[in-house]
Length: 239
Image: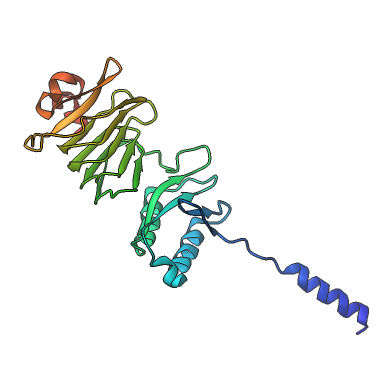
């Protein structure tokens, strides 16, 4: 075989090798870590690569609490995919997911607007976001934030920031078993509660929007203020 033929074969072999773009790119910022997911790859591949990176990171993942921002690109994921992703991050206790974003669209593909139940504590620095109504079985600590496009129900202590109707729903409410928020937002209206709460007041309360202001009332007054939510009108949908 002549040299020219060998050279052509070698050149051909090189051109056939493609460097696969990383499915998960991690960038450090002054506020934490940015995880960029390649939206051209199957999400199962992304999860496998993410698991590998989190497993092989060694001591770099064992430092102080670090905020994490996740960018999905032009991709939406299902609730099941989100749960699998969060489970991977939970293996590193210091990594706190602050936000999940898709370019120009909600990050959840199913567009769920029904009520969803989650359990756990939203710690300081964490942001929990949900599309639709959310029932949180747990606490929201000072410095924590929960943001929903629908209503928010906290069966625990609400001591952080709560934002309901985040996309403009002025009928959304915020209810909590222990109502001690640092800030309330419903749609575009913001209310700052008193500096100190009466700790002896243990009644469940809810906040709602009236005349472009946020009002707070006892939960047993809810049916009087919002008769459209009364059980008689909704029982067929619940069963």
